[in-house]
Image (cartoon, rainbow, N blue to C red; front, side, top):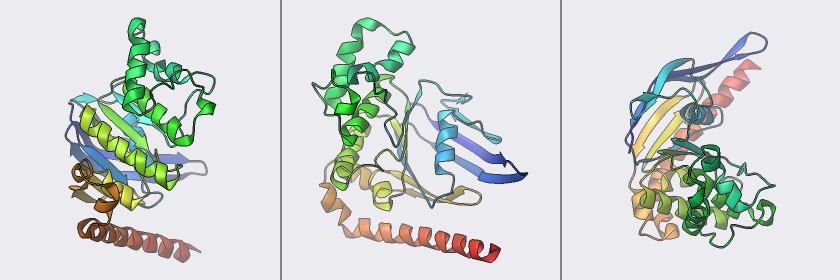
Length: 268
């Protein structure tokens, strides 16, 4: 497992009209391999910008990001991304979607079907390999997106609001699946969410980010992800410890939102 290191990362967008947007400022942290990190904060705090820098989709305007000591300079198969919408190829079958990455990497074709079927079993879609994407529900499509990500065997899985478009019941089932994958694969997972409950449940480490410019305001190490592997999800989320921490973080974000609104009103 490779450790991730983020050092003094800055991101400034040069917007038309000569106005710069300072999206991230002096973001630094070290994340041991195999951790499950959730990123939480109000809109505009740079969560997705940070995730895109970790993926290599964006180059920071300052600072460095390394994985296993190697500087990240662009996308590669060591870091897989799961988006809010599956970003799947509608014209391909489920199996063809899952094996797309290995095929592009010119991996051994002989094991494609076997690997796809193995991953489909892991995400609870055994027997769906020959289905078309449009035949699947939203939750099933996100399971395919997870399987496609795992097919490249990345060191780090990055998730940008992967469950945001799902109904409440499907979302809870997918949360449990993510915990199971984290435990079974031992991979590092970094997840962006707007849900405090989800961030607490799916983060054995949690960053609360503050906006304008985006930065890490609070850094929590939490027991709930480990507990969720053996406890009923609803029981865990009703526990006094979970609810107390949820209220604490909600208050932090609420104060941030109030400050943002104050700035906005003052500028009018």
